[in-house]
Length: 303
Length: 272
Image 1: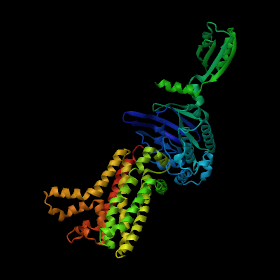
Image 2: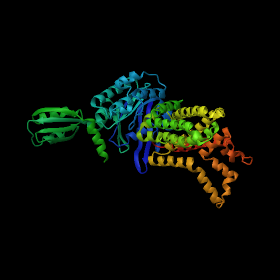
Image 3: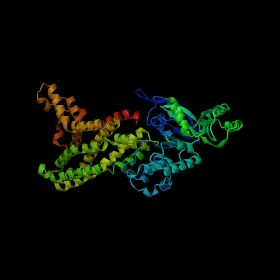
Image 4: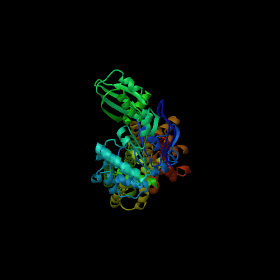
């Protein structure tokens, strides 16, 4: 079953295009990372899913229910951590969780949920006195109420310290193991890289890539970077390396190191080729292209 | 019953607002105070006391209702707490119903307590003749208060422009509570080339338009219960049937529902 299906969704504000014909399918059980710089349209897309914003064209559905025509039904099976929310000023953390329970008709133990997100000690304080990080934990708790089939999280790590972000990722993993589909947006790459099965990259309202992280690496030339330190750099060494099949770029630094990007298979071939050419290899290491490189590659291309 | 969840949340949230409690205390002080002070202002009879009390209520209660409602939804929308409210399976109509019902509870609970207290003091001081109609007074007062709440919540849904809402709420108060009669009289005078007799002997249609002012309707209803002199122009033999007391109920309901419907019309498809 399909958790999220977007069909040619566009949103325009006057002459500004916030989203441009986004087509996206998220399968049930996936952890999907929605990546893009600030202002790329991630929140607009999520707000359309939640029916906070009406699309100019196209449609989106959650588990087969149209988010606009059938919004309340679509929201029944999801847990949400929206962006730009503020808490209910005069309610405590516990009362927030209780509101979530009543809204979903769910039976749960508020203390258990508050404990899971790590704010049980502050459960009976007014949420308006919470720090941003605590509020974020509380709203995550509200989203977890009723074991939703889909968790929709907009920039979930906002306001969390690295520890908190790690705890958040742990909870997302647990939820995913329980069977929930996870869809979250972020402009921070490590987070997406750490938990996501698939990633979509949004740039200026356009979905420029949707793939697994490995797939993205591959489509970017295997994504392996080989750093080779030589005894000394001779003329012609770079040309030798460039003749190897699978090598994309080869550059040298001052201190006789080579940086070569190539497909995964080509690594050994390069070393063999250097050896055959009589060049002494002092040291070598490989670096996997990080998502960050890919991200820059993708989003940079557009400009 | 999604709206009841929202109403409950609204009561527990708005009901803890300090401003609201200050206003409720103000209303209590004014109405109970009036119950003590009435003997200096009018006849020491219960109906006269009630008539005076209704004038106080007619002026103060709309302020309370407007303050309670005019930013209810607009503020949540600006601050972002509406995102939290509506990310759950509630429709925007549920939000309207929940907010309206919730604020009604928050407004009427202290109001009715204050008025019952004032009524008890009044009955002790001015006799119990006419006390049987006191529940009617409470009922029409509730209708009157809720009408302004309807206007306020309707306004609150129509826009997020703070200043516009504030001006509109102030404008509604001035027109509906203070100026309706004067504006109406002025229009009549202009239409009749300043022949002042028209004010004492209004044409039938003009009578209806006068009644459309909520404070006029409220007064009409209060006096329908007590047969006080001031209702005279609506109860003469020649008065048309459509200014009977039930029309005043229709008017107050319309003041409640029309703004709600208009506000909802703008809110329903708006981007939050």
